[in-house]
Length: 330
Ligand code: SF4
Image 1 (cartoon, rainbow, N blue to C red):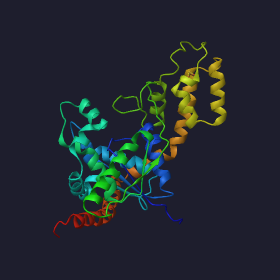
Image 2: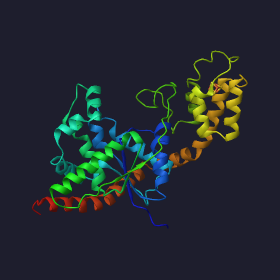
Image 3: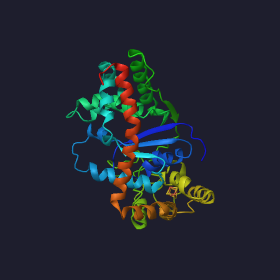
Image 4: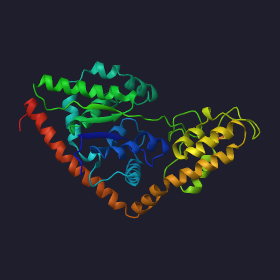
């Protein structure tokens, strides 16, 4: 096996069954990174607590998300895949890091202000400390690389600042400053044709739908709003169905739609049917793996627990080094 280039860390909140936006925006990249890096992928259940009004579904959502990651191609025999709260060292490192993080800096962050605006009824302490917990996740596992879209690079820069502050304050090099790996993260638009695909907006297409359900969902997709009838020419450049064709259809089909749409040679119904067919073909291996994995739910939990065991081995060393650097008694 080729020498890996370093360790990647990434985390995602447990949001249950994954949709096309999750797949194209994150999971596909997670799978690809495994070829070149030692990967540590974390389901960040503690982060989720900062914004959840109810935790009733957190266990189920964690399971469903893990199932989708595995079905999509995460290889647990090489990749460490685990649940954040199963490695409690992250909470201790979070506290230690909080001592070198100015409060004003946290409350000034645009992400904090945005979240506070979104949930004025619940501006909790965890919300303020969110970036510190995120830094603890990354630094605990001594990640070399954090894959992020351009707009999220500031989160990693914040982590680097915290690592520098800690190392400077305690005259150590314990915490490794991670590098950003800029990733092309496509903005996947939902079935409403306007907003980013998201569960909360109910404009999503789940990966695990049946083929028939997928067709039904695709049929609800908003197309070129100017195209009122089958006889009107359409404009694929403003149509989300066409964007999806570019990802899931053959070059010949994309070319055909591009030409025929503009001269009303193809109707939106047929165009969507073609996309749905290609999407179903593309998702077929994922679905059959998912069905197979779902036969033994305990296997999924075992994989997550084994991941936590392996993650703990790294975490314990980093935390011990951090405690020693500070001078906390053994
Ligand atoms: Fe969009 Fe296809 Fe309809 Fe053209 S024919 S507007 S690309 S759905």
